[in-house]
Length: 370
Image 1: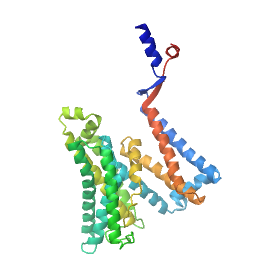
Image 2: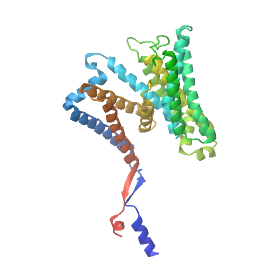
Image 3: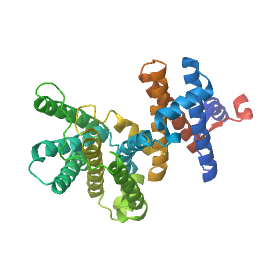
Image 4: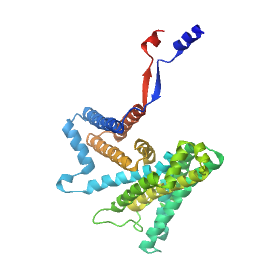
């Protein structure tokens, strides 16, 4: 028996990962804040190395790339910055209910594209037949329905047949992309381009094209916070995410929650498609969402499913993306440089989350010698 105990000790791993529960909330956010600052400084450092510019000059280029001549009273670039935040945040908000339920919805791209497709079809086909207020209402309703239906399909298969939602929603992205490509080819007369449509565009507020988009996403952020924290459905989402067996035990209809939550998630992605088409581009193509659906997954996860924290994370990511793109443009670098730098910061944040939640325990010296 003694020999077996010694052999067991010898075969024990040098270290093991243990869930951490000894950090106060302020310590957690202090670590996260430090990681963000360190990530931004690393981005500036790498930009300095490649461009050969000083710290002050590099940061100035990034600041002007995001905010333009804000100090001189020009707010054009600021509104564009807020618009980019709004689009990415709206996708992250759309994914949050599903992710909190541990339904890994990777189909935000396709759901947003289908919402955008519904918008552009209404703008083209009904633009000269309906009054402006009615047209806007029709665009909103059809976009929400299109996104909801695209989210409903994988939810039904998951709830009834237990299919893998990650693969299913990813494949739905490819289907949506091909549908958009076909529609653009038909309406573009073979040119693969649909010229900007004037009918059905969101109204300007002053000189600002993006005010409606920003207000809509701000409202969704507040509503989503209340929905997840204070509503019965938000509670059911949390319970299903923790344990489906527990949810069934206390009388929650798990299949119903899965389907309902994915309808909400898809509908919100459809709203994003509407914002992109009616509020920004006034057209559509296969790159309208531009891969932001996958970035939104990280935003939702890093924001701990808290809409207000997600808004902060989105602002940081968009600032880095636009700012570093401006640095790359100034130095005649490849546009991928911006994505690489943003990926570096996100990777650091992911690593930070691991060490915030878990600690590494090494074997004691006496055990190691045994």
